[in-house]
Length: 209
Image (cartoon, rainbow, N blue to C red; front, side, top):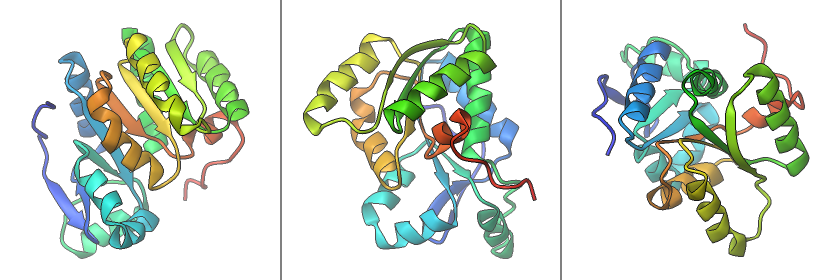
């Protein structure tokens, strides 16, 4: 099991959100990686709060995450309106990039799951350019057939994956992680949505403002 969170968890619109800044969240993940504890990471924005109010399974999957990031300014504003001292927005892609940098530095073994095959291959190529020497031990597009899943899970474990990034849609990725985490030996499992598309250059990020 993961180490206890050193920061509180709040509820906004029925969804869990951890009251932590970027560095606190990253340090929590790093500590659990070093200790070989499994941590599931979710991200919440306004659209996901609305979806979770109608989808009990999505909400349950988010609650099962050891870390839930406030991936949207609407979440920060709502928290502050409720008197919750949420310090900042933490974009999932920013956390993913910070983790990839750590993977490069500490030789963690990375597996990428999701997106279209062409996008995934561009993502792998771009990550290798950004983080020279990073150890990507495997990758699998998100358009596999259900009967292929056992083999994919075996590949993730056989590669001794330490960081698994899951780029599926909502609520697919949250439910996928919640259902399959017990079968996966990776220490960190993070849902990253459309981050592969952004890294590959297929989509642009929202403007900073």
